Image (cartoon, rainbow, N blue to C red; front, side, top):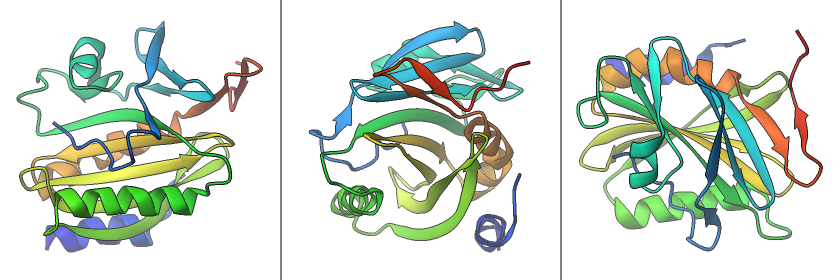
Length: 203
């Protein structure tokens, strides 16, 4: 029943060790991260980058993230990477010349199926990313020792930004959904060729 509720939330509402997505190693770039402030990080590769902020009640852990092969991980305050019921982490994939987002997502899905042939996947409703973009979202369950995962894909000219929510249970995933949406809504694209930030609003 909770699975149906999660699907309903993602498919029908309008909203203003995790598994590394199965993109090939040639496409997935180990991102670098730079602290912009204590509650935010910039994740970048050769051809693009993005910034996300930490949701209220969560912490950003760069040291653990780098040990796990990504730039950083987020989990609820008072918990740890090993103990958290849910974690969120960003990643970034380079798009080969001429590749579309749909092709990259198809490659990602193939990678998941090869590693977890018994898993299930649901195409969820797009979610807001930053001020003006939409992220394509997939819901995976039965992966990584039975975990439940949401993967959001934000398409940019030469890269795809990824944001992953990985939870130990359906209930934990449902409880972490608001934080996941908050991180995704904080998304700001960084053009590494010009140094321009798209989506920042002067205050």
